[in-house]
Every structure is written in C-alpha cells, then in structure tokens.
Amino acid sequence: MTALPPDVDALVRGALAAELGPGVTVMTLMPDDWAARLPLVVARALPAAAVDPRGVIAAVVDLQALAADRTEASALARRAWRGLYDACVRQHAESDAGGYLSHFGAGGSSPAELRTGTPGPDAQSFRFQATVRLTARPTPTP
Image 1 (cartoon, rainbow, N blue to C red):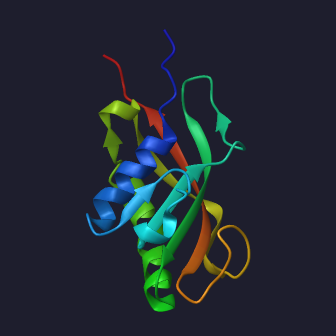
Image 2: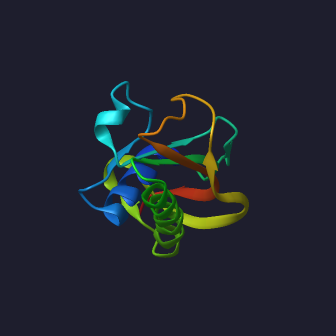
C-alpha cells in the first residue's frame, strides 16, 4: 500500500519549536492576538506543493517572523530559516505528522523585512518573511 503523505505543517512546526525554544511562539496560521504572542514565527506549506505518488512532498513553505524589535525580528527569521535547513539535514521526524524532513532545496528566498500587509506595520512590531523549499517523506514502513 502506498504511504500517506506526511503533514508538512506539523513537521515544520515541530522542527521550528525544537530549534527556537519555549520563548518563541510557533504557529501555522497568524493568530488574531498576534501582538500579544511576540516573538512569533508563522510557517505554513503553500498550496503549490507537489505530491509524489509515493507520499513524498516537495513543499514551498511561507516563513514569517515577528518581534517587537527590528533586530530581534531579523535574527529570529534567520534562526528559523537556518533551523529548517538543519532539520532537513538531520531528517527531523514527528511521529504524529507521519514523516520526516529530508531536503532543503534551492529556489526559496532568504528573510527580508515586510513593510506592508496584514498585520500592518507599526512602531511596536517588525516582520520578516522568507520562502523555503523542502522535501517531506513519509515514515518508512517495514
């Protein structure tokens, strides 16, 4: 039987939480109370992900980092970006997600500051965004 594809969002969330530690909130969607949760990383797989019939997913992940200070937001975004690379190198797995991360691909973007969008820019928060291409594979079955 062909394996189910893994839950990319759960894999990314788990990898980022492990990398960034308990002082950073990691979520898949932007919460309504985002300003109360700073520092915050929001990461989700975009619908453009390609699925291989063997359960392998080549995903494009939208990665956003928000903090009350520009320097902190920039560092957080770069740590998150590096954390996903490291998670792919060590093949980070989440049993509940049904798989593991296996490859950090070319073609994404490094973190850059966003000055527009939702939530809107203000003097109390700064936001950086990057896109990451990675591969997620299903947990091997015996």
